[in-house]
Length: 123
Image 1 (tube, rainbow, N blue to C red):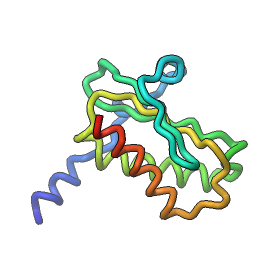
Image 2 (cartoon, one colour):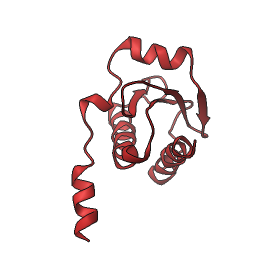
Image 3 (cartoon, rainbow, N blue to C red):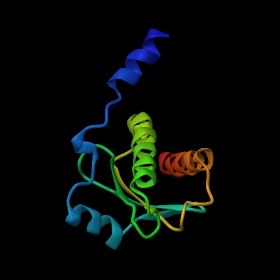
Image 4 (tube, helix red, strand yellow):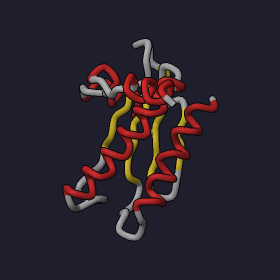
């Protein structure tokens, strides 16, 4: 029990695990190695040389009109990434919303995020 608690305590989401600059996003968007699709989400994946996985999100106001909903999606992506980051290789992952999430519930959104991260883990 204490082993899982200490592992969870050490799994932090740091600034180095984020894509911060437009140039970093452009690298992933211009030449992705893989594109992973779900019904509402999509992820662009590219190998990086930074020694750790990094995540970025491009969630537009047009697809997700309310700030509350956009922030919810971002929190869930960051949390699932944080938990699985130790098992991911040196990949840059950029999540985008393909279509409006009005007709999707939180459970299905979490499942889509988990499915994309599992696909990144496998390869």
